[in-house]
Image (cartoon, rainbow, N blue to C red; front, side):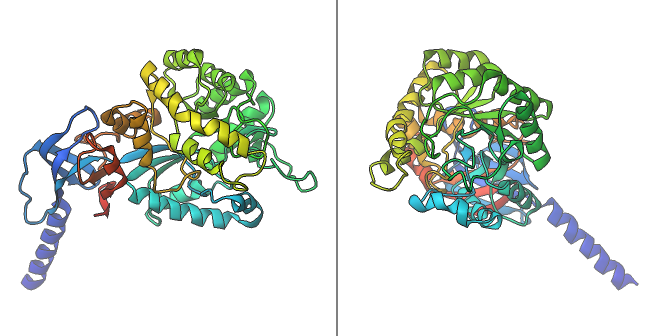
Length: 428
């Protein structure tokens, strides 16, 4: 009996000490995400999946703790990309054939692959703005359950368009094979269908709503910038989304479409290519975020030079719109518009997301502000800044690190050497 009691006591002691064990990180340089400077020699203590404490100097770890030595690195909050499409990646002419050859499972498996690449690139949270078959709803759930690896996903499921609009899945098809699409498939006309489409996305498990308020570049349709929603339709979408606790992200290149959306109370404008002074003033008045996606513009502008890479209807749009986005971003930033980081990855390659930082800095944004756009700014836009977006005690332990100083050389962000998500190390 005494022996059994001793064994039980030893087992309980082992369980209690393992439960009490922490992860201790020594950070040579530390960027909290709340300021514009680095701090030197800091210690972070991670308990379970949260930051328990942050202190100056390298504090010793106890025998049962795990010590992670990043004394030669700059430690930062996990990065956030507010505009990705995890289900696909543009690869030229064959991309337009995939809707005829791929099934739901194919898109889901592609999404799982690209999600892993995104996480290993240091992006621990993403906003996925458009599926084919709600595949990132399933992927989000799988990641949350721990049966798949990837970033924390906030998904719009299938985007909402009007008939013939940028996200109409029947665009470019012969009339003999065009599917019958409606609010369930994300195609609406009028306020009643607008409300129905939002409610369907709620039913499908979406976290946010995404609409295509103007024409787009890659859709097989003539205009890349015309307004495609009436103002009452956008207002109906925003009001219904608000009832269900969701915000509305808006694809928009043309100024009229984005103005209608801003006045309706959307959370963000994506791309914003032809943003004018009135649109900028409206964004500042309403607190609307701008998600620039400069990388996507660079990508399509470059590929438009290649004969046959895009369909004939797409190529002139890509050549005209793509080169303008970086300049629009520079003007918007200087005017004081709220900026949240976003790449439109899936147009460009997944895992290259951090290249966007370089383009932002080129356009006049200081490196610290560019980083914050993918940290606290993005978290505020998602309304999760009480949990993520900065390195502070009590917040979730999403942490990344690079060798070098990103405030002096922003290109080091392309070489993430350490990733922790929710207290678990996924890259070291």
